[in-house]
Image (cartoon, rainbow, N blue to C red; front, side, top):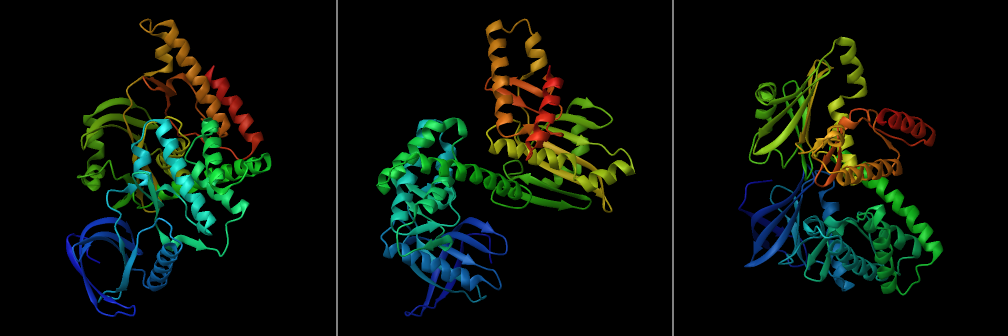
Amino acid sequence: MISDVPFQLIIERTETDKHPESLSCTKLLRFVPGRRRVYEALWNDKNVIAKVFSHTLSAKRHLRREWRGLTNLARRKLNAPEPLFYGQVDDGRWVVVAEKISGSSTALETYQKLHNSTEKLDLLILIGKELAKQHIEGVMQKDLHLGNFLVQGNEVFLLDAGQIRFYGHELGRKKSISQLAMLAAWLSDDWKKDINKLCKQYYEVRGWNFDKSDQTIFWKYLAACRKRAVRKGLKKSLRTSKRFIKVGAGQYLGVFDKSFCRDAEPFDFIERIDVLMDDGRILKNGNTCYVSRLAWNGMDVVVKRYNHKGIIHSMRHTTKKSRARRCWLNGHRLGMYNIATPKPLAFFEQRRGFLMWKSYLVTEYIEGLSLYHYLRDENVPPEKRKTAVQQVKNLLDEMAGYRITHGDLKHTNILITGDGPVLTDLDSMRFHKCNITFRTDRDKDLLRFE
């Protein structure tokens, strides 16, 4: 399928009114390799959305599911794009064309632009009320997330009709609570009052009481939702997706955040990495790792290279996965838990044959003082030092709540910034399933921190 826009798409309609339709595709909105592309298009002077299914074996099945979903939503008079027509292009791919909701953006885009917690809660309540209406009509999203809602003013529209299950009756309590938990997972645990408010607003639309038994089930589902969301997010961070691009060049293989390589060539960065590091401001040059601060593509970044230390060392890290990869995943996991750490921008590995040789981690540069130097800086007032100590304590308590241990928790691995403490050096971080191992490693962390 052509990816450069604009281009014309001729669709042979396969409904009762069979005739060709011409679309002018003007913008690529989403691309899932090997499965589908979503375009903004123009049809008879009308703005529409064209979803092109390209999977060799299941394209027609996906089309039917999408069309059935859109028509069922329209029949139940729920807010969703109006289905217009569907058909096949000459290369065998299938296309569904639906109304474009003008002046709208996805709930995810809207949510990410909001910095005020009250505004974020208001948005989720708006979505929660629409979700309640869908559940009353027997509609359940199998893949509920903010990217599957459109927001236009005070109206919410449902997207991805192919991922919807329809029932001939209202959704029962357990299914409804599980869906509500998926929505509430966007709020952190310390927003408990806001989460309860979201639940009560949803229950009000359903005409239900948010009693203690429902609350117990809800919090259980919410914990499970968060775990699933983190697992899914980490998987996405290792492949090409909406946010990331997986790259391979000769001996090198890795993943880049698309924001880091926008209007730039990641292979150029990979090929020049050692020179760029040598020309940057060297922060550490040890036997195990080499750290440099440098500028690339208009961004101030820190690159950490984990050095080759012999064949046995390479074999061990080939089996265990590279330290850069572990830090990349740990950084994204902390980000999903809203625990401050420098944003991971890229990681890549150099291999020789099947062996891991070196690995590189790129993160944003964070301006701040290490806790060690901050507490010893005479220019910092005692009140600020006291505040920083309390913030660090809160950070450690938050980590304990998620059963996270750092593995090398020392004062130099915590930066104090204007926005609070930031955790660095995530090489040895662990996320524990077992309370016994967590307590043991937690005690070691605290002993190291003293």
